[in-house]
Image (cartoon, rainbow, N blue to C red; front, side, top):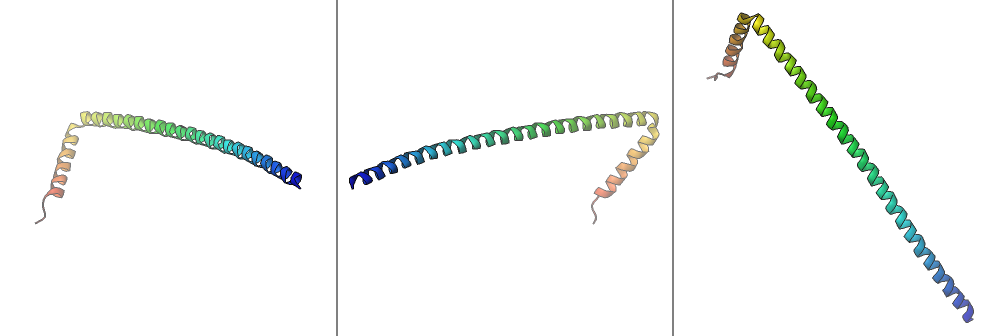
Length: 104
């Protein structure tokens, strides 16, 4: 009668050791998976940030080029038509003055 109890105890101990080993392997697998996903997500985010940074830089450079072109065109127009530029400036000044005066 003691033999079956001893065998059952040994089987139980072996099963418990196998279960501990399986849990250790599962923990390692989950850890590796989480690391892999975190690395993948970080790489993806860094790529998106870099892409956005490039787009913003390109847009800013494009806007700066446009402002420079508009400024150059405005200077050329003023040099060709100085009298018209003076009248436009006077009109804009009067309009701003009328809009900004108090209404009592």
